[in-house]
Image (cartoon, rainbow, N blue to C red; front, side, top):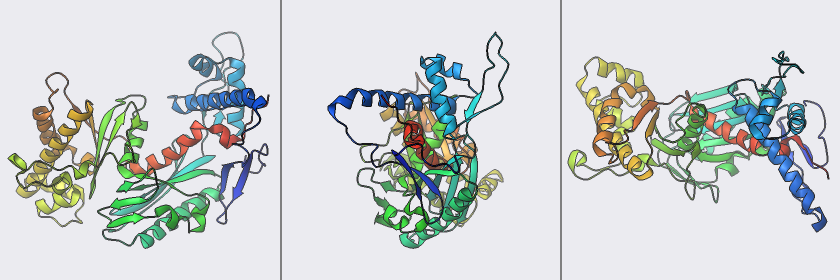
Length: 433
């Protein structure tokens, strides 16, 4: 695919100033034809649906899968599956391995796997103490990554976005030099991103409000042809977590991520519940009670955010989490108190969420994954005490499996998902009557 032209006039290559080649739908691809063409349009839509179905089976399989396996799983004929797979292989989305001898008489099975290093998506993240960019291909392989540490509290949006655009430019240039095609970009932000109208509404810990992030980023040549999707960082981190757990489960859980801020997401049957505007999951701003053990009131973030924990422990805010754990393990009273306090506040908040959404699993991400040994006891104690259904269905607690900087991974996955939903738009496949 690296040098050939589009297969038909319904699709085109857009060559950007920075060099990356981006597959785009043609201008005529959505044209409405005369009434006599209605049947053909429906057939074409069915073909496109089946193309995505075949691709998804290859991507979600735990190992190599054959055309016959896809036919059995989908109910499609082998001839249909073979034609679909041929398109996917030709488009660089699926790779054929060496044939495997069949156990019965017949042709050897040809194992199919997601293509490696041919198509990638770029996930970016702006957080309070770091910027990052990660490129992932269809196989899940990280092709390139850049992370820059810093303190971005009260920062200027323009200068910070300039810096992440520069990081993205370095990654995109490397991919382009290697002949990797780019499916698009997405950016994770620690705040409210309006999924209806587009801008970042507020990111309290950054000090940003009503920022046209896409407009600022696309002023840079490298991103002018790759305008990023925007989403909340905790939602995208949960997206990566759901992806990792898609085969082993659970498929429904509450994800809570500790950083300087505290983010959360609700995952139901593998899908993120984003809410009407995409604003769900702001668990860090949950207001705790004004009586009992939380007499002073405040939000979860004021008890269990990274800064709050370190302040209560009497440690500088720049202290690595591992040093906080070491201090607590060594018997430091203030460090232990800070972790118990944070765990109790987190447990109370999670109990409220579980009582409302009725899930039985909580995943700890971000710094909470590193602090899980210290937080587990206080969190479980509060869940047992305060979840009304606990006598009949106890809430399980586990640590995130998605690895470091999961929001970057989730952002890239979000882009790749659009390709999986409509691979025909990528391949330029047009079914003719």
